[in-house]
Amino acid sequence: MPSFRRHIADIRGMDDFDEDAVLAKTHLVDGDILMLSGSLVDGSGTPSSDFDFCVIAQSEDERFDRATFPREDHMRYYTSGDRVKASFDYLPDSLLGVDVEYWTVQSISDMLAAHRRLYGHMTSRARKSSSFASSAVDFRLLSRLTYGVALTNDAEFRRITSDLVSGEVAYTAFRTAIGSYPDFRDLAGMWVQGDYESALVAARKLGVDTFRGLTHAYGNTNRNPKYLGRFLSRLPESLSGLSERFRRLNAYGVPDAADAPDAILTWLDLIDLAFAEIRLVRDDVEAFVSRLDFLNLLKEELHETMSWNPEISNEYCFRSREASDDVPPLRELLAAMEKRSAVEHALPLHRWAAGRPAPAGENNKSV
Image 1: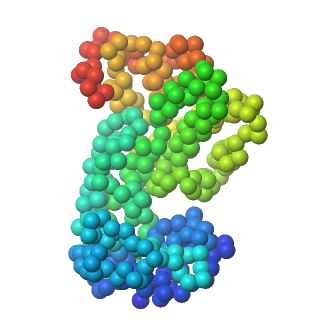
Image 2: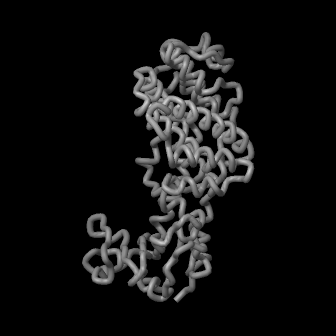
Image 3: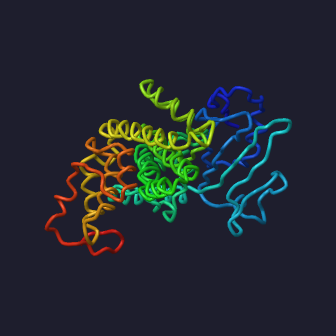
């Protein structure tokens, strides 16, 4: 049986374990690729984390069928129809669990091909996208493939993942995280109503999304916000002050309801600072769409939506801060929207759109 103890990060308070007892839960056979990943490997785990294994078989066999799967060996198992997809059990006298997913070489190859198509789509649009939801990409597994350790058949593992580019995974995760103007618009509406409690919740969500995007710009492929604070701690030391301000506000909030308006504005300031860092780092990340290309995509998507109006101007101002330094702070944008007006900015969309045909309007595309 392979040894994997050396790949487990040093987790404070973690129980000792028997490697053979853990591996016995995987039902490994000759020819399988056994990949170890998850929080115990990337260092974000706790004493109650799971050993996360992925068995990649050459083809489906009796382990994949509900009728012949060794069900009695597991506390629970998960199926899709008659196909067993995963199993789970705990180690005796321990908080540690053993989670095993069952895939085939073909299914992994198909998913990676689906991600290549998704990445191509993501680089052709500027606004936040939920296209991943119907893309046949398991983002959790995809992230694990970028850092997972093949305990068996490493050469075969490297072959089937040879086209996997970690930076491209980070970009698709980034594109699904930041840039939600509808969220900011909702926040503005709550602010106008004086519903600061709801506006604070919206500001916190927008902040979490943006700071998650910042970690993706620095290469994080994990979309799960559960360990966002830990991923922020791995950013360069120069960002430690910004990360600490985010963590304190995100984790502990405000002491009193009367402090909510100031906290909302503080969130907006932190979001602006995070966007400024994103602008700096994306210039050096090959897989990220360049600033100029991003702004051109944004212009195409927002081109004079039927007629020029303050709403389109404000949306362009909000979204373009991902790539343009010449944007007013979100505080000013919020104040302008409170007055039902457009914030002043020097962005070129209005000039660019002048004299061009109006868009067809379908699927946010210009003609």
